[in-house]
Figure 1 (cartoon, one colour):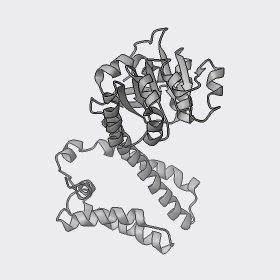
Figure 2: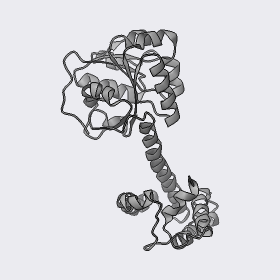
Figure 3: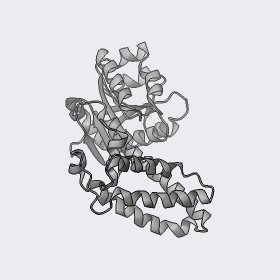
Figure 4: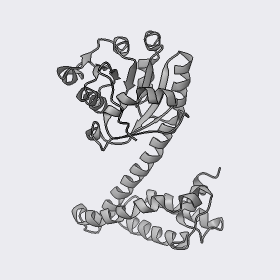
Length: 298
């Protein structure tokens, strides 16, 4: 969670990458009174931040030498590597710290950390779990992984981004792993909602009409996410309330109705298929979460 520690007047930070999120990060640092240096591969994106008091660097090397801490936020690790792994940048970054808030997968984070360690560069990996509009507000959520010492050293600057900051441990891939898992929930849910709207439209129900009831369904989910998590971690999936045999019956109705209207039902067919495989393995009295073992048997 956020620390009350205040950054000193001499605190400085560099931001590499000035897409919408990078500009939001730079703006929050400026609002907190930090000396902020910014750089972007495409010229011109720094104009607004420079007008607000940031220093626009001509090169990435110039940018990172202006601060002990560099925050990177670009489209993916291919883009980050293209900026960071040039010989000139390696030399400029030695003895400094990079906090990489670029989204990618856990193994890319591990590879980046190994590269940084080989070149005498401090490295923290991170994930931003909320939209650009939350940056600098209490609603922002940041996750980090990597050396605790580095996190604590730079936490006063990072905390100026607002919201909640959580260090998930020294294993560098954990922030990216959390990010992937949480985005999995989000986009799977959004795909399900899009499919529901398609079915509703086919039945003459508008999005406006369905939305209040959809929000009611969504409100059921948060308590379920915390229900029985210890049992799940122990491989136990009680189906006393709703056995998986009942679940597949409901899923079949959704598939049937969808396909009657010519609507692609592959999302629900995939879920139904997992449930039927669980039943086929003798788990018909278990709950739906038994499909975890079907997807990941290890």
